[in-house]
Image (tube, rainbow over all chains, first blue to last red; front, side, top):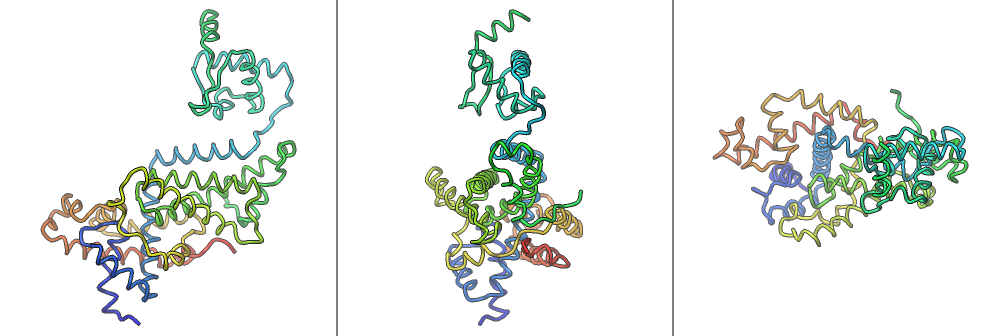
Length: 167
Length: 220
């Protein structure tokens, strides 16, 4: 059994351990804290409460940052891309694939390389159509897909020259 | 916006509905909603869990652990590795996060060679299990977030500044005593330590008061 007096002497060590501040928390003090936590259920509960509260405070501050929100939005998009089939918004025909390929070629000529998962939104076309038209252009050596750059789709050099000449 | 009241297991079933790609075209909206709700429910709790058990407090490092965990979770769902007969989705998801965390910790140690700088001492294994089960997941993340903001507003200006420096940014006592509102503690670090400990106790009690739902598990 432990008593209040004994528990009190670990309160500051417990605070510091979770904060990761070693100013006062020597290795010996940490070991003594662990030994106390092993035998004192009340301090263990207090430790877990503090640790959860601390994680919540830090997490909230971190998730309030715009860059974290952007990171999370990207992760969500990636998960949807990997684990959900794209929505088929309209029937697919060869003519539509051809039309989308033309639109995609023009977009790449004007805006440069695009990450494959972002392509449907960028060119504002059905995801199936966007992918099929990318394949169409790739087969004709008009676009290349670079897996080392996050599956980036770009016009080949020759096609870019042709597109610039036409413009 | 009304929250999705379905259980995790119901959401998993909805996410997996019509798995073969040819059928999925019709059910994709339902699958997307299920994925969104599972993400809303778990993205922050998993981050907090990783933050608690990771040896390193670098926030990008914790972001990476969360990302790897979520990808592994959805990959596992898709390939049928989650069996509801063997346990809840929550335990299974946390188990994956735990494994990813240990794996990343090992990699970090190997590459960064920072053993001497390790965030205090590792938590002892014999109480690690109990620590992992310490309740955390909030019923509603948005509700939880509002509550924390309200609690911080209840503090005096000086306590809020100390909370920011000591309990959120984890500055050392020396660093805190170098900042303007706490310069008077420059040669009295033990007093600053005492004040921080008192604030910690006050804050934990505020966070616990009248918010029992926030410290219970979500799953029924």
